[in-house]
Image (cartoon, rainbow over all chains, first blue to last red; front, side, top):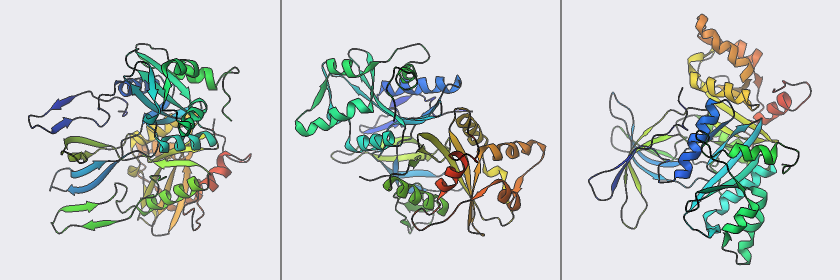
Length: 204
Length: 204
């Protein structure tokens, strides 16, 4: 049985100047995504949770149906997802999150989180799901889980001119995610502490 | 704000013999899918649940990047999803289901449900999610919700030669889904009765 978490990393540039061979949608240089996918595959194999990356939505314009072989999509366009990157089930609860990576050393630009993603997370929160953002500071090689409840008010502050969250502030409102060999970004360790223990955030 | 549930139904056949214009992935003549998508949009707008169709996974082989316009996928193939069609959150619980349609009057062929889908639903069930199949008998214009727990043992019976479930049996093990104008296939009415009331199936 194959799960989509187990992705391949192959990507080769073709000889033509602006044509690129890609083996997988998820492969756009986002190593946080790759680490999360590996983590999710590990969680699935360990029977700990069932969480997947949602496929990128694609608008298909033209499909060719050759005789005796598979349909070929010959014209299609990437669409912006109206939701978040990942969802699934953990201990009976619905889990839904977005992952973001920044190369900035000192701040995370709020424009990285889109309005429709915040609206989606707000809806998930309303329906009693667990929802958060994982932010990687590539330069510091650190990953933080920030619960929706904490990012929401800061994000709304953009109306008052806020353009970013400082790295220092992320360290205050976020939770540093431990790294391990197989659970590369072991975010369920944080989810356990925040949503499934007495001292944690109550979700509803 | 646009949600993927609100899909367009446009599909036009091009003049060329084996080339088809499609506006949307989901549009493959499955009107049950369309009805479920409309239902989910209604649930979302009524703030009742947040449930979406997962995009069909596509393997991208070639992408062209024209100057000053959007990237064009010029070669791609449909991939079989390793999970189910729909998932989301309802009353804090994770919901995950597959929809199937048959034109057969008297039976539902078990081969319509793939092994990887059963394995996925078994995992969801194990993790405390709510999981089921919705089957439409097109000829009878009837939709049934069949909990995973009930379909599972029958599906496994294929090893003993079972090839289908009769329509009569579906009526016994399934729950007829009410129809209404906006909640076209109002499956949450059945979910409420089965999983959120005292007399219903206990999930876990």
